[in-house]
Image (tube, rainbow, N blue to C red; front, side):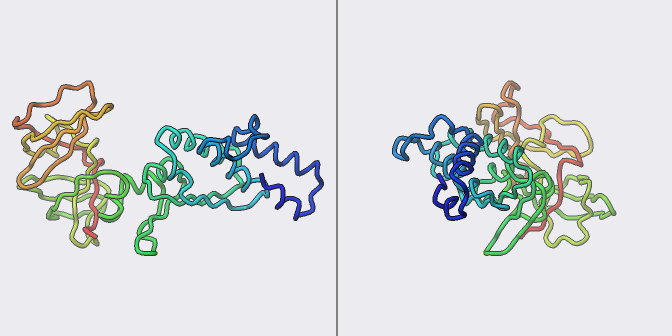
Length: 257
């Protein structure tokens, strides 16, 4: 623990002991206070490292790729613990550096996406996922269908676009100021045999079961569409001609940059 740092601040021994106990309790390590580092697992060592940083009561806590060396189950557990820790310490600002978009979305209240040493996009996790500004952000925050379109009518809060001969409506973005616009629609926002105004003729070329979802691949003209269906729903056969659709509010226009 951070006993030397606390001693350097000339804190009484009793207060040091209380802080050590409190910080270990915050990260669920109270029962391991007498263990040596070699007696701790990787996840436990990470918890102790966080407790050591918290012991000096910093106004800002910097976590630089703290979970990168851990396997998937440990990462998932520590992510939940970090969310819980921040909820219990709302006055503590946590700067979390990661290359994992899942971690960023799960933990972040505000996200800054870096590119070549500069901020390429910033906002809330939901905003960056649902309405990214450009291709780079759209592809970083999960898979997306990015389709070349032509803007036919641009209004204040919507746009009508054409894709492979289909006229489609997109809400929330007029496309006036977008250079080289692309239609961005996430795989889970697409449906097969959909009704409504946004309908695209396509042919099924692949089906992959992925546990919670089935990833269906379809081609529309020269373009591949990725569609996520619930695992319990029967997917169309490969080679079947289908109609793929999406709600206007579940897509956006992004710049091809």
